[in-house]
Amino acid sequence: MFRHIGRNRLVKHRTLKAQVSKHLDARGESTLAWSGQSNRPLEGVRVLDFSRILAGPFCSQILADYGADVIKVEQPGQGDETRSWQGSGEDQDWTDDAKPISFYFAAINRNKRSLTLDLKKPKALDVVHELAKKSDVVLENFVPGGADRLGIGYEKLSAVNPKLIYASISGYGSTGPYSKRAGYDAIAAAEGGLMHITGHPDGGPVRPGLGMTDMSTGLYTHGAIMAALYARDRTGKGQHISSSLFETQISLLINVGANWLNRGIDGKRYGAAHPSIVPYNTWKCKDGLWLTLAANNDRQYRTLCQKIDRNDLVEDPRFITNAKRVEHRPLMDDVFNDVFAAKTSKEWLTLLNGSGLAHGPVNSIQQAFEHPQTQAREMVQSVEWDAVRSGKWRGIGTPVKFSDADTSLRSRPPRLGEHTDEVLGELGYCESEIGSLREEGVV
Image 1 (tube, rainbow, N blue to C red):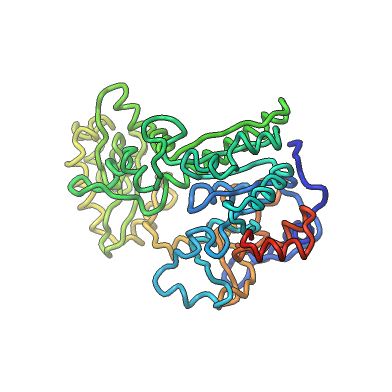
Image 2 (image 1 turned 30 degrees about the vertical axis):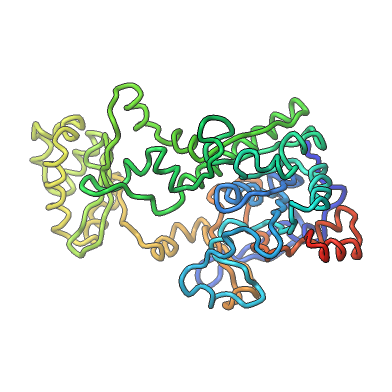
């Protein structure tokens, strides 16, 4: 159990969040009803979150899902830049009083409280220092040196609270020739080698469909924060954690990187294929839909040949082992292109079901969310919210389930500055003092 710095008292809205009882609505989604108990892994841990865009907010959302009280500090009037990242026509989905807001922002900022502070104002630093005294974790993603210039760097805040876990996310890390550069997901994916190995062999480099480097950095940082909290339990001391998009991307090269480091072999683009397993690819079926299938070893390959009624391929010396199949990849691909083009995707799925072979259709986003396993595992959750014109906000559920803890959605994403008065009130500010801070542009 983490020994947290914690709060002197639980705030009003936190006493209501508590244990969530769930039921499935007509769409198979988990909808929420509040009760008075709470059982969340990070209950009582407070996170002061200065991060913006994706990597940091994704990290703090995981902590918030696990029960941490995440206070998201945002610039008055504007907030996190992603609040304005609306898709085409999305403006019509939000009520006027909710703006600035976007589904991009909402997707990575649930279960948090929003506090607006102009960090360039001296009185804002007074608020930050008071919050740091009562927090367990600080998270920021300024360019290295930026937090120090604002007076909220590790040295300043750890002096206020020596037990503080201070996590910094940057583009390239805190040292080295690129340390002062801003970091973006696509740039890290490009410079870190991911785009070089993503795409089809006869095409150019491709950015993945999601911000994988950003989100992986958030995942790494969340894990590091958890480890630092555990270490603090033993030592009683806080520490500074540094992570970056570039270092994360280099670490994710895994087997491709190992081949270069130990054999001098550069990575290639294989499309949907696997560099060292054949057959392992995506094939177009008779109906124009796509099927993904993998035969990870020779036994599975023999099973596949039986299922597609091509036993002749089992004893073909060009394909008899995986090493041979990798060597003769173009021939193997030609064979399976013809094989899978002969039946519809539904026919293939029926034929392969129960075979023990890993296979599945290439689903659209709609099909992925309508998947029966998505519903069975409560990966879509919703909550009533008058900011959305439909009256309901739908979010993606947490992918990790605990046997004895609740991690379900407990509060919708916050409006800009929605909890400013609440948080300042917890620090002892009275209504007139809060009003003065607002008049001075501090909040």
